Amino acid sequence: MRFESKVVRAGEKVEEKYGAITTPIYQTTAFAHPMGDDLKYSRELNPTVMALEEKIAEVEGGEIGVAFSSGMAAVTTSLLKFLRPGKSILVHLDMFGRTLKFCREFLTSWGVKVEIARPGEVEEKAKRKFDVVFVETISNPLLRVLDIEEIAKSTRENGGIFIADSTFATPINQKPLEMGAHIVVHSASKFIAGHNDVIAGLATGEGELMNEVDLLRRTLGGSLDPHAAYLVLRGFKTLKVRMEYINSSSMKIAEFLLEHPKVKKVFYPGLPNHPDHEVARKVLKGFGGVVSFEVKGGREEVFKVIRSLKLIIPAGTLGGTDSVISHPTTMSHRGLSEEERREIGIEEGLLRLSVGLENVEDIIEDIDQALKSIY
Image (cartoon, rainbow, N blue to C red; front, side):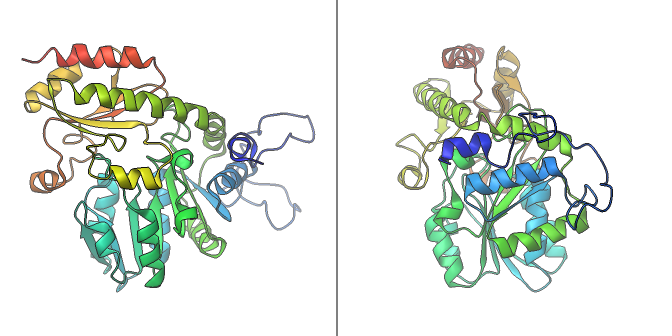
């Protein structure tokens, strides 16, 4: 199947007994014996979950897919499999706050050597030997775009394992495995499921490595519920058409914000003034559905903008059909010190907008009227 067909049909077949054309929800804890060596207990294997695992593997070009109860479960299980006391990992400061917290606090306390790169340092630091290199292909929330091909080459030459979180890019805009990553992970709660109604995580990559990750998932217990898997499968089918519309809308919104007198800075890889614009053109097929921008003023002004929005929803998530906006300083990155936030570039006035499927002019008008509420 071609890519568009894989997004819709991969991993799913017409159900044999009754002819259901959507994957049934096998809402059961266990399976009656004898059923062979595979289906025994749903924490280990479940047909609904297996369909989703096959789909992410085919869409991303991986050999084996594994589904998890959350994006963080996908991240932590993958890292725990390949790290132990004395091992080393390279991450970067400008990533999702909870991921950074896990690396900096838990892994460090466990005896893992954690190197934290500052923005713009990752490609150079990745030339050194690390057991694991873990990056977000588009960083959160300032949307720095990493040269995945260069990092993959360095990591492989040094004998390390390269794991890429591609949640912001999605398989529509980027396929890290084709660029040399060993494993790609997603918070499927975001763009892949796309409806703000399910928590899920996915990982796929080289078969031998993913078999090891899957065995640890079964032990740690971060398995995906079959009903949640069904919701992700449902959302997955429209991922390509959603992302094409969202990519287009996001570019228009970024260009509008760039000219707005109440906006100090705009962060979007599609803009020529973005520090990684040339890298983004090289490694991305689309620039994504998140636009970050800094409002002139401080916390008082930014909260007034948030309160003045009528269409866009203030919420700590992204990637859904509804446009949502968040304040990284008090939400996703509240765990960082003020000094660390400033070092990354997260100021009090920064907002992260996840663009949904509303009419782009309605989104722009809502932002404009909210910005006009200040000064």
